[in-house]
Image 1 (cartoon, one colour):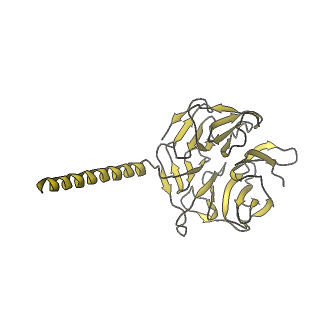
Image 2 (cartoon, rainbow over the protein chains, first blue to last red):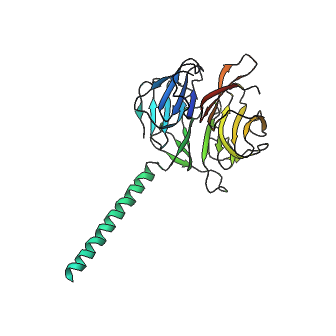
Image 3 (cartoon, each protein chain N blue to C red):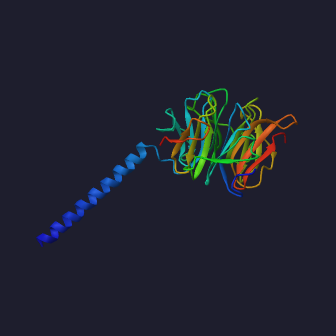
Length: 87
Length: 203
């Protein structure tokens, strides 16, 4: 699982239903995306931190939602590249 | 003497003003729906309409992509439910499963309007992860503390059987991932206090 901060808690996890090798991890260090079923990871959304949860819209898996532990909600419509604060 | 009274009046007025400011802030806080305290889970229904959020203070839903939130009423016999997992059925938008810290598993078959506990076979009620197999709807949950382990249900949660000790480290999230293990099943991924772990879910 290269690219994920080692020995850190994974709080949230979501998978693209159309391509299950595409997955997202939410953790205190931010949001991470893998396109190879978790072998390698890349941090997405530089401003995202202290994340508790992530989910993918099943009908449009490029639409991703993430929440911080405190409840700030962010949305991406391009698979995690750009993020818009919802609340 | 007069000066003293004016001073007291001034202090009193200042106190009232500061308190009303605090109250207004609290109201605003509530209006914005930020009474989550601690968020545990997010899940979107199969129709892509409603976003559900599980938190220390219960279950919330949003129909506008997370901009505004309403608290969802859960069974009244529990004064407080810490919602640890929110797992909408991937094909049926009316079916949603919750994992809770205090009351095990709750299931709704009407889009979240009413909920029933569905814990037969569970040896403990502290549920920290709930996964649904996208192919056949088979469920797995992670139970902590009493009766610790992974439990499986093949009938929509009506009955649970313990199948495994589960991964090391506290489970935060459990997800069935539709990647074949080559042994007749698909993988179960667990987000834990020790990182991300995966296992073939054919215990």
